Amino acid sequence: MSAVMIIRKPTRKWEKLPGKNTFCCDGRVMMARQKGVFYLTLFLIVGTCSLFFAFECPYLAVHLSPAIPVFAVLLFIFVMAMLLRTSFSDPGVLPRALPEEANFIEMEIEAANGNVLAGQRPPPRIKNVQINNQIVKLKYCYTCKIFRPPRASHCSICDNCVDRFDHHCPWVGNCVGKRNYRYFYLFTLSLSLLTIYIFAFNIVHVVLREYRSKKMFHVVSLTPHCTVLEVLVCFFTIWSVVGLTGFHTYLISLNQTTNEDIKGSWSGKNRVQNPYSHKNIIKNCCEVLCSPTFPSVLDRRGVMLEDSSSPTHSDASAASTHKSSNPVSQTTKSSAPLIPNEHTPDEAKPGIGAGTQKSTSSPKGEKPPSPTSPNAVAPAVIKESTH
Amino acid sequence: MVLQNKEFHNLQELRHSASLANKVFIQRDYTDGTVCKFQTKFPSELDSRIERTLFEDTVKTLNNYYAEAEKIGGQSYLEGCLACLTVYLIFLCIETRYEKVLKKISRYIQEQNEKVYAPRGLLITDPIERGMRVIEISVYEDRGSSGSSSGSSTTSSSGR
Image 1 (cartoon, chains in turn yellow, cyan):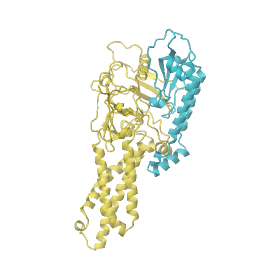
Image 2: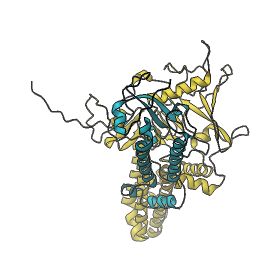
Image 3: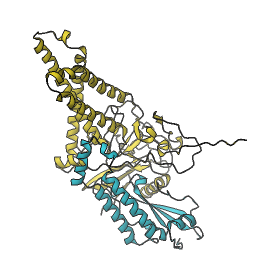
Image 4: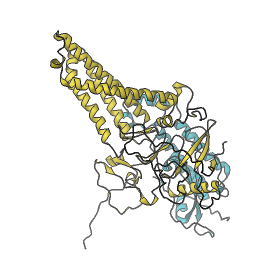
């Protein structure tokens, strides 16, 4: 028998991460699974800008100023960098609890719940926490087996809990969360500027040609068709992107996330006021945009310590999909723990009618909150003692 | 069940001659918002293992480190502006402030483990390895001591 030397690449942790992300470049790049809309975004931006550089810029550089294309190039580079940074970085995914931690939390919950009679629904799992003198409810995530930190939410598309979850954006092909929110904001802001810039200079270009040719109403014969195309693309983009930028500027000034805004967490009389806001627009903006860059806690590129017998994936830069989460502990992904017919802690059955998984989501979509049933057992709340 | 506390003189001895009995998880303290801060409440499982003041000191020092990392001030503005101007390429060359503090934390935990916790049969896991959610303290017992209920021979994570 001849012994064959198999040189195995070390298994990196990203290959074993649960969740529905795809990883590229040996774990350096992290995105959602559906990337079609992201490619469309790339195509629209690169395509429109290429047309602008090819057709308008030479004319404008000569007849107006060479600074125009230079600034356009800088803006384009900034937009692409922000887009790629948003799309490829870890949004702030919270790793799932290891078995010991999960058991510890289960024991805590059971101790708080006391004896639940057989046949009775167990109470929903909520923890009350006081933050800046407001009571905030922390929900338990059955998929990740943790109590979600404040402002974290579970993305059903990526199947991860994300810290300071804003929304899942199909246009960038990733969740927008704590770590990449500022890049997302800068992307929308710079894209708005770029779109307005291109739109404006297309109009200027058309007007200039008209003026110089001293002929009126010869638009179709003189200007290339691509100018018209660019103007159309920019016109429709402006409405959506500028609106989105405005919306996010509003959210930043209030220190809110899209998720909280949609759910109405801090609005209304009976609701808690936003405990995270500094009540000062400048301070809120500074906190969101100028806070220190938070590191990823996922450790995608760490080497797995245990000896995995399966051969490692020979992945180059192709989107190598990670190993799917083991089906044994397949819990409901997107169920809110407030649904009373939720499965008991020990069983791992999906909740009845609770899986509201969104396949194609709107850019701001996440699961809608589910109302509590009046028949539920009074929630046994684990109160955090304040000090 | 009161078990004898054997003196473990270093981490190596701990790993070789002790078995993992239990893990205690120190949860996050959210009273000040979403900043990273851990509860200083002394867990009852550690009652017989370590002095309350030592434990509280460790957690308070860790909290101070995290507060320093997340502080929004002159340095973070400068770092943010510089990074934005260079299209965040500057992070290929330099470390962010948070990463520098995380290294300090890692050294501190290593030092605490060697000096304070390992001699008492305990081991702290860096919170970054648990998603900054908990401080995991592994409680070890000497394999030779009787009445040990845990049969698990796997040690806790040996770090990155």
